[in-house]
Image (cartoon, rainbow, N blue to C red; front, side):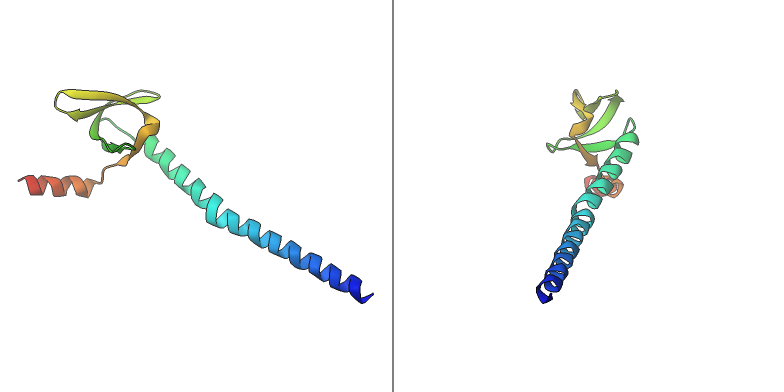
Length: 105
């Protein structure tokens, strides 16, 4: 009889750890990734012509045209390239653009 009670408590204890591990995976891995995905989707929807961006490959430029799956990026005065939207790394910070202008002046 004593052995049965100890086994039941061990099963409950193991089940508790399993629930704890699932909760940790959710809060440490799944939830942050969902937030990042939502933030990226918002950024992609808010892209406009004239925005300065950087690509995943490190190319900096200004958006000149936007299509459904691609964008056109001006990387110098006479050079434009077409990129997939998925290759966009992010928007250049507005403060960074102002600091560069101050240094150039």
